[in-house]
Image (cartoon, rainbow, N blue to C red; front, side, top):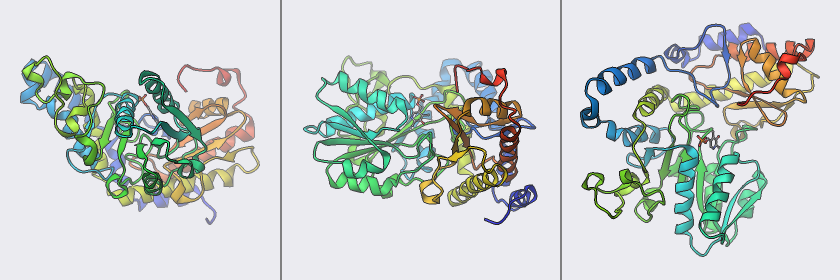
Amino acid sequence: MSRLSREACAALDATDPLAALREEFALPPGIVYLDGNSLGALPRATPARLAELIEREWGHDLVTGWNRHGWIDLPRRVGDKIARLIGAGPGEVVVADSTSVNLFKLLAAALRLSSGRSVILSERENFPTDLYIAEGLIGLVGGQHRLRLVDGDAVADAVDAECAVVMLTHVNYRSGAMHDLAGITAAAQAKGALVLWDLAHSAGAVPVDLTAAGADFAVGCGYKYLNGGPGAPAFLWVAPRHQEGFRQPLSGWLGHAEPFAFAPDYRPAPGIGRYVCGTPPVLSLAALEAGVDLLLAAEPAGLREKSLRLTETFIAAVEQQAPGLELSLLTPRLSERRGSQVSFRHAAAWPVMQALIARGVIGDFRAPDILRFGFAPLYTRFVDAWDAAAALADILKTGAWDQPDFHRRAAVT
Ligand SMILES: *Cc1c(COP(=O)(O)O)cnc(C)c1O
């Protein structure tokens, strides 16, 4: 890339076809927000939508809101919208519970569908909750199964006749490395395994086509790139060919075929509806819908193009402004291997990130030594990439990070 400048970045913003969508977010002035992969920004429409839901729908219409305002349909309605972001069809996705709980439900489904096989295969560097949930489930189903962990690059070759399910996160939360979703799905299925994808760092950030890949199951997160707000519910997808064949273990009343028959025995709802457990979080679902609507307003190819260009620009800006300052790039340079974030290792990553945050550049820290910067293409500007790199270079050059305040640890990183 030719020599970058702030002016060149501003010129990229001036011709960015997605630039207007930034105006749909309530970003605080003076902040460079590069943590949309941990908590997405607030859509401007969300506060008014929630106020209306609370004051009019709930406050005035009370329990009649379930029917009158279609609250009961929200898990499917928002699910259908998310489906369009991940290459799934209508009626194939529901929004429910957290990503962790959805992993539990779908892993249990996968194990039952592949009886005789005993291994859940995953990546050592997978997000820990995914591995913890697998461990917990294995304990619960009698201890006959094993969790086998290999390096990310070795997953496809590690699938064998013992392997019941391959459980992988498409884009790694630490490095931002992206797996070949279609390639690994095909390789695993050729050996008779099922494949469960965690799209927490993919949905809303990189193109995903579950149908074209012929995948089996997927889960994903509502509060990251989907901008659903803190603790937003998660989504899950089950390939239509598997939907009817399985009762998920959290057989709650709202996954029943007729919840309001109040029958004593469980009969699963047809299709994806059986993957719901209890009462949907209506306020959170309405907030999530506002976030997803903004993503649907963008053209998917344009989103990916901008995301790649942002991450490329940031890498180049850091390398140009902070050479020899003990940063090492963890994220793949090859665009087809990169999600929508950039991570650098630095020995003092924690205090360096606190110093950045004190200057209004918000990224995050991941143990043990990672500076992580997410680039949500809906609202991040090219000048943000430049300004963040400039602040990082300055903090490293001047040693401004090395102050007692910046060394103090917090509960959430
Ligand atoms: C963020 C994330 C989760 C979050 O799970 P919760 O149940 O919402 O806490 C799970 N898996 C991956 C890969 C994630 O990145």
